[in-house]
Image (tube, rainbow, N blue to C red):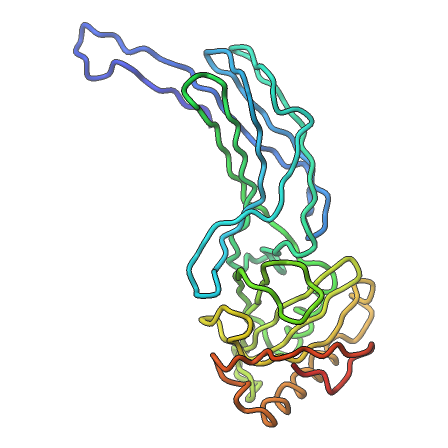
Length: 295
């Protein structure tokens, strides 16, 4: 939105106000559907306003609000997007459009599911530095609406079929232990059954180790106020491939995982507790789903 800054206000009737037309920055994302792993394109629109602009640096960062293992909130970038140029001039009274491209990592968070926001704060932050002697920086922030990958969506749909219809999420600066994930963050999705139909687990927590092929779905009892992976209750897991979404009986896998989770906690009651260092050493189980998959 354009704005103007007034100088000379409050200086008396004999001092006229001077109107200065400031520069503006607008980040426009062209990609219609965003998912982890997706290529993203768009353009920056820079309007010079009433004075010539000399741009000396352009930085585009997808950033997220993330909990540290102790629960404190921080803001961190997950990757960088790039422009073809980052030093250029924009004459007064004109605008310049600069294309940008980038790719979301496979472990990027998803912010929405089934048309509803999950509570994850994930944005594209743009900063343009001006060589004007005053260190002026133009900024723009655009919320990123990211849909889940097919395997993740299939798993969430499966638990929805089992009655877990209420969902929210956040990010944690920690790793899924003993997995092949290179991500320094993980995204737990908290599920609850509003009907109370699942007596063993009225609330669940699901996290995903995702890549281009599919997802390993880690299931445990819900502990939203515990953030470090090893301090949460223990997990069982089951796999879903992206190409299976819509064809495989993922609901049956989710139901078996629930049964195994209950059996696992009966065998190891300490691992059902919060703060019980429940993850332990993960065992990589063969495809298809192995009933003994517990960590």
